[in-house]
Length: 588
Image 1 (cartoon, rainbow, N blue to C red):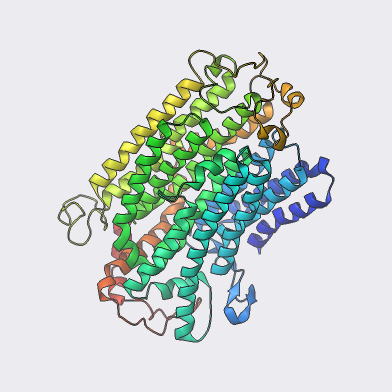
Image 2: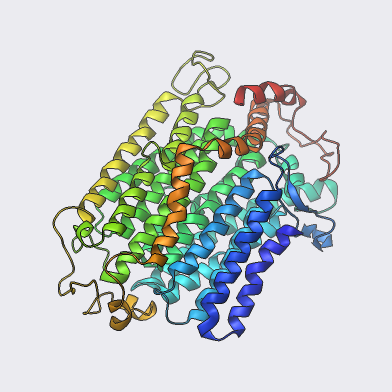
């Protein structure tokens, strides 16, 4: 019930914003977001951190059933993976409301109401244990973000919003096809429909390996568009560039994580045999995306587009960790989701702050801002270093874990991908990757350092460069920004009143993110420990069912038990089950 309350708080606040005067919209939105944060804090305090793999705060299927004949419910629960991402979502909510104070001055009721609806949908994704409820929340996130981009975006906002919607909607429909197929095959055998995630998970991994391949293909394609993985990334730079600042923060901080969350929560355990088989191909796509995203950043002159393309590279590391399907890599991947949301979200906030003053993001028109905006410049350098992966900051830990996970994944029951005999690599785990994959992907860290240091050097240091005609006090007296002026409420008088450097409000939204970047860089072990058990549970399942894939029957067994039953005879092979404890010890 507590999770239902968590999801309903922003919805209730959205209704209040809709009926309240426009002058109170932002205050109500902030109260709603702080309510979510307070409820999340209570859940974190009440969570049983000794049993992090257990599904907690459950609203079970029977008591939450919506459509009985189809087995559709609003069942919810969280383990530590979901809880961490709920906490990230709750943190960014009030930050985005605070960051929008001067950026959004038109249609404020509509803006804050849809932001609250989006918050509710994102929380629903991380809490859902029914696949239709998950899909509904997953898909519904498109509507608020589409509206935010199309109404409050920059010059090409309509094109960006349409491309964002069409790409991600198409991918979501393909993922739905995979989910419905698994549910249909279960109903065809058992005579009853269910969309309970645990029941379908047990059934799906009992399917023949070839069938699992199609299921994985549908889920992988749907979630890869959302991540986005190369080559499905083309919607992202335009959406980021045209979105309002808070929209970019939400997009980078949470929305992209819906794709990676779907991969680790559903794609891997639903089709473990297929995931093992195709993990080298997934890793190859990730490596190409890491290098491609980094190299494309080199030719960017728009700071916001540069950071957008950097997300393609960063999330390539994230999915590479999943492709290793070992505890090190998958834990690093989930930690990367959190770290990317913190550092990249902060970079978008900083870019939005300088845009409010200068109405340009071009590196040709901005330079040497440290002399005029020392506080802004300090934060810019700090978060750029966090994004690069500087040791001591959060990005380094997760990036290293993803690469080390790929390095470890080199003992594929006989020989590694590059011909290494089984057992030759100390600490090797089952997998097709190995040292060469990790080394090639690691060059992406070097490329990232080069383009981010170039961007920082150009914008922060060097001779002072400002847009032509810009006043010495940071006001945009010539109204740069074209459409951004109208849709964001940017007018000369409003922004003429902004101080040259950051205000207390702007510093306030950045400090929590900076503190977490330091904490997760210096002392990440509490988070890593909390993620260990649910990650080990997932990787053990992938390893065992992947190992037994050649022994899978052509026809799946009939007696896969629904959720809550103890009969596990519907598993593909009991041979793999005998190795569970062995693999847990190896993975841990």
